[in-house]
Length: 180
Image (cartoon, rainbow, N blue to C red; front, side, top):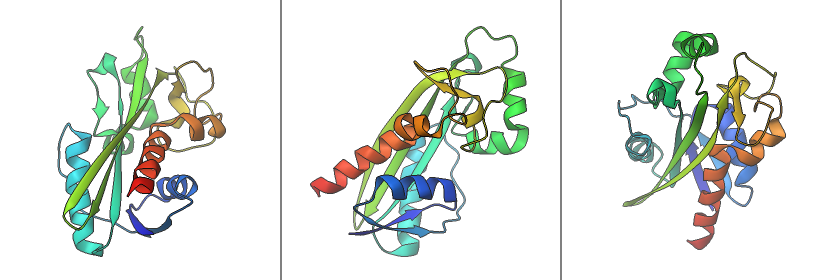
């Protein structure tokens, strides 16, 4: 089965290719004006519709965010934009002195073929460090420690590949595809 993953992010594509090994996965370099919403599902559904119109083939998109309760869920669906604007240092400054360092990653995959869109979700709970740690990964990986562990995703990529929000959602997507 050939499916397109609409993303311009080579890291996300590599993660998806590793999990979806039984699918002929092709990358669709997808650029679009993302809608503004506090809902990952709404953003992913809209993007899947737009991507399908471009490639006219089964396609999925993945949207994710880092949600920090001490910051009222910020940066949430704006995680990529916030990382670009204030970086990890900015997030750490916002969290300076915070006792509650809880955080969670959430991911949402929207898969579109013909007339239907299916949506799947995944999450990973953990906490934020007080400084960047590790050289691996990308995005918020150097400051995120998954629940029950001591290393950041950037310090232990193997851990990330087994626990991340995206990995969990891709596994669910893989199971979904096998039932179709």
